[in-house]
Amino acid sequence: MEPIRRVAISTGGGDAPGLNAVIRSVTLAARNREWDVVGIRDGFNGLLFPEDYGGDGLIELTRERVRGISHLGGTIIGSTNKGNPTAYPVQQSDGSWLEVDRTHELLARFDDAGIDALVTVGGDGSLTIGHHLHRHGLRVVGVPKTIDNDLDKTTETFGFDTAVQFATDCIDRLFSTATSHGRVLVVEVMGRYAGWIALHSGMAAGAHCILIPEIPYSLDPIAATIKQREERGAKFSIVVVAEGAVPVDGQVSTIGKSIGQAVQLGGVGAKVAAELELLTGKEARTVVLGHLLRGGSPTSLDRLLGLRFGAAAVRALEEGHDGVMVALDPPNVTYVPLEEATNRLKSVPADCDTILTARDLGINFGDRMP
Ligand code: F6P
Image (cartoon, rainbow, N blue to C red; front, top):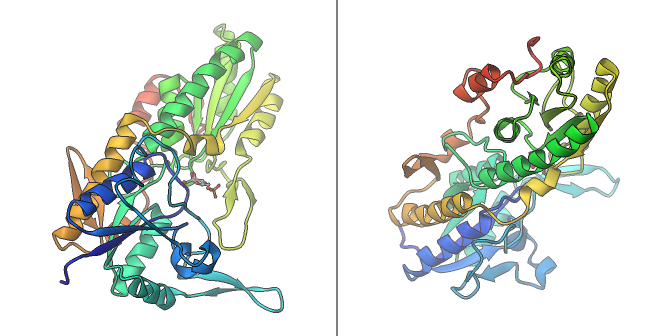
């Protein structure tokens, strides 16, 4: 294998607190090996469309550039969740859209920029693209990222802890106002395919009902739980619902779809609240936490995980690994083939001890009468 002289970092998909810690860690670990480091702006757009960035879509990542960034939310090199380079949407003269494979164009740009290896930081989509580029000859190491914590082969992704902590704080606050007014408060959180955020924050904050994508729900058990609480003297209830929760015999709640992007989820919280009003006769309100969960300063746990993942990615490259993802397997960070890591998502097992604990506490998931 050729020695590495120049490495690129790309951050793709929805951002997550901890991305800047990864960027800092990759940069320092690489520079301490005398490698150059560049950040590709906005996923791969900086390489594909340099003209959109005044002719240069790469950011030279120096020690100075990454100084004091670990505690910052977002990503200093930008991200995008549209325009997968393997299926890039291009508008045709008749107004229709065609998905064009720009793999070879992108690989040529890596070559032109003298980039020997890529550290791609992303969720399922970006890691699948990374795997694709690896199969086409690019040296690639992936770093798993998503607040949803739904990536397989790593026990945790950075961003998750920050999202759970923030959601927990919000639900704590909603308790007092729900109590004052004797209302039902439905809190919608992110979680497209997996209910980890809803489950962990809901349990930590003491929610009474939690709806997650892994357990199709009916609202009769939720209404019965609310009425049972009322009979026991608790006039308020808190229901946490993941955006991807699906009613039995129903569909996931969507807002719409933009070209080149995954379908936008949303609206389940409002639907649940409206139906619960009818079923219980109680006033119900909805709070959507949405992108608030992706913002803000990462917790120390997420900063540390980002730093560990970034340095491990550089060590992986130095040790000659290629086509792997760094992964948390406590107490270590290990390397797993990208192919395995992107094979399936990590959803909440219906029989995991967290779910069993929740059931023991009387939390209703909308699948059983209380
Ligand atoms: O990062 C994953 C995620 O948080 C999903 O839970 C959610 O559906 C998606 O991002 C929303 O992303 P955006 O609004 O940026 O398209």
